[in-house]
Length: 360
Image (cartoon, one colour):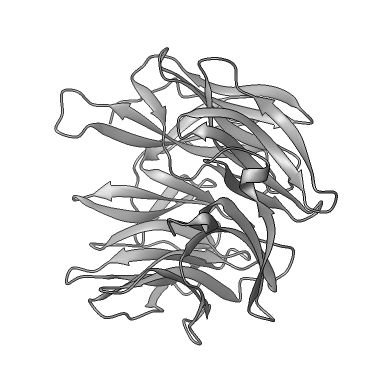
């Protein structure tokens, strides 16, 4: 594979990524416990979950010949969950134990059932996921990390962000095709009860979306838009004082996409895009001061819509860049990159998408 950027090196005190596309299936326990990045990579026309060890620049394909998507680390870094597409229909949620090097199907659904989009609770003791059975409506459920005690908590899918414990989370309903899609609720897992905390139409336009919850300050992160591709601003809403604080307003011709908090909530990352000029940027905002991290201005590449992930220390960012492949059958190819947020040095890791850092 040809290099798509000038390969540069992070400082000696930082994580070093050098190897492209290495697949190592037999590695020591010590090596496995040091995996610090995971992502999806296409191998033999299927999407595999890849673990990457930056200490010795090795990687491991844990999917073998299966079709797996969107891996997510447990809060303690010991497990990775992901969605597996089954050949005979339906999807299941798999759990990979890094120390034991084993994968367990924790949902074991029928071919008519799909378990997908799993996320961890703060403690890592439970998993929230979407569930769909053919002929029925999609809903949101919760289960223990071993797959036991499954139960429905919402009659629809939702964008979910946990508070500082396992007892509650905030969410915005997704795809109900009702007024609920423009509201934010707080759900108590103790009382199994949702409380309306904000009508989004009172602070923005029709397409205002929830993108994060700052549990330390009890604030939610909002992208306020009048249409899906005309974004006005990024703001936070204080749930205590019921006040809105504008973070950044888009200039004419630009839109903002997918804002998110850093792990410590001190920074907000967002995508700034100009469709006419074919310019795509990642911007990091701290205390209202904006810093351009990366700019794509060739009109031939753009940032992938899947996850952009902060490292545990918030010093590094893993992201996906899509690059048009006009001479090939595929419309584009995806590549995982890492950027040092202090030096802005940027390197390519491998082909793939949806990178996630080990939280430990």
